[in-house]
Amino acid sequence: MAREFHILRTAGTPAIQGLEAEIAREAGEAEGVEGTGEVEEVGVGPTGKKRSGAQNGLDRRARNNEQAAKRQKVDGKGDLPVYATKFSKEEIETQEKKPKRKVAVMLGYSGTGYKGMQLNHREKTIEGDLFKAFVDAGAISKANADDPKKSSLIRCARTDKGVHAAGNVISLKLIIEDPNIVAKINEQLSPQIRVWGIERTNGSFSCYQYCDSRTYQYLIPSHCFLPPHPKSFLAKQIVELAKEADDLEGYHARQKEVEDVWAKMEEEYIRPVVEEIDPSIRDEVIRAYYEHDNSPRNRSSTTTIEDQKQCISDIPNHGEVIPSLESVDVTAIEDGQTSTANMPSVPGVETVNVEVPEERLRELTPVEIALRLLKDAHIKAKNAYRIHPARVARVRSHLSRYVGTHKYHNYTIDKTFRDPSATRIIKAFDVDALPIIINDTEWLSLKVWGQSFMMHQIRKMVSMVALLVRCGCHEGRTQDSYTADRLSIPKAPSLGLLLERPVFEVYNEKLEEYGYNKIDFSRYEKEMEEFKQREIYERIFREEERDHTFHTFFTGLDNTRSSQLFYLSSVGVEATKKEIKKDTLTKATTKTDIEEVMSEDEGGVINEEG
Image (cartoon, rainbow, N blue to C red; front, side):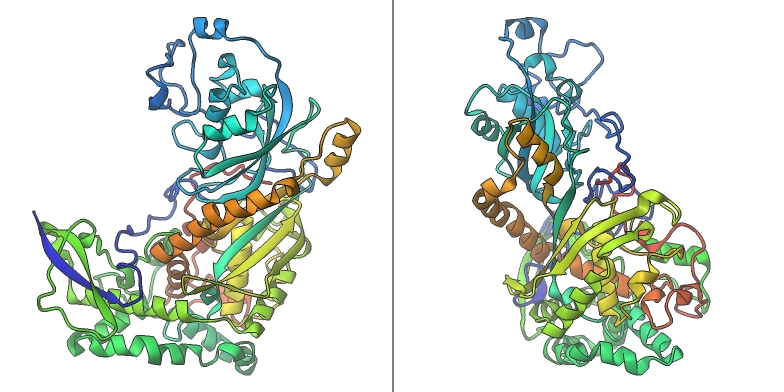
């Protein structure tokens, strides 16, 4: 039984944001992500070592129910992977045999709704849909329809859940006699996946082994470069540590262009909402929002390492709600309706109808409702922010510190300072000078060009720069991350990440010698740009407007009581080893670092280099 209930929200914001979000998963829980969600592709490391096709992990998945009726299983071993089909012996024998050719398939896709660009036994993936489309279009014979290995399928760049690609390449053997084969393949695919073209190659070609470099784009709202809110845990600690290092003046100089931003936003967007909160709960609401106190228990004056580990593991996965009263579990309003009776009137706030099951109404409290209003006010204030050119220049300067050959063991998992495979070459990393404004939110475009990237590397690089700029940190701190010191660097959300294209400069010269066309995306520039606007950019902007992923990510970090991010302060790496008293935590001594608990995909395949 459900009855009508009205929830207040700040005017101009999408219907109560994040109400459907779940409380963040515990540390170590496989993301899958949220499932398996992020980028980073498989590729060639600087040592020149290359993995075989078997090592690339051609996994099997459960059978696609849609085709079960017309394609029978004959192996007697249960369901096939969802990307595979098994034709009967009669069907295979009656099909005309045609020659297979080794080819490079150039494609683009939106990763939304897919568990990445890899084969998975049970999940819907880009590669799985491609393989089925090849079979349905006649580019792969029925005899080979049950196993991609029979067609020597190899991907150039692996991407995980939610990550997009304007350009990617797979190499395999296809039947390409039909001049309309590209159109026929696209007819079998979702509009989210497009094959741009197919080029013949020599028989030994592997798009994974012969890719020279890759370029990526990362779209991020400009408000991600705002300093932490002055009342947040991280902001207070950064200021205290600047005083300790006798660098308060230098800290303020590095934050000059944003020194009064929060004061103005408080006055215009936040104070009107705070003043409308019932005075009897106002202090509790403010304390809960800024102090991240989501536990009914009282915190003691000192906190154990286990408490800190729990606090860190409360940091949300990307796309999940912050596990504090700021984003308290209000899923009670997911599926039902309410009444505005006895609800306070707040200027600039409108009413939204949502259905709430009768038995769950008891979960809503005045504090929870006030916290939701306060969160909406902060989101509206952030979306109104417009970045100063001097701030963009700081971002560019920090990004430039990545260019060159460095040890990126702190930007991935399971690699040490002495691991030679952690050394990577970044050829360029820059930010567009002119931001773009979409749906009243300002976005910056970051572009990186590198030889190869490890698991999580790009997202951690973006997160590191955002944190350095936000916290007014010395630019030299990036160099500290290349040393043997172990730093906890969270991963930025996968939402903004886009593989632009892989590059085959050296191999393209050989292809011309063999009499084949280059693997070149420039011929499809117009189609790719239209596809990016329609299927990728619009999805990114729409998802951020709905879920406030970036707000959730950075607010979660700002309010997490841990010393693990204190390397962002004027004291530097040594500050992460400090023991903090009362309302703060001592440094965790285990591998349970911020960057790992932030991960929504630690349970996924970790063999994701590229």
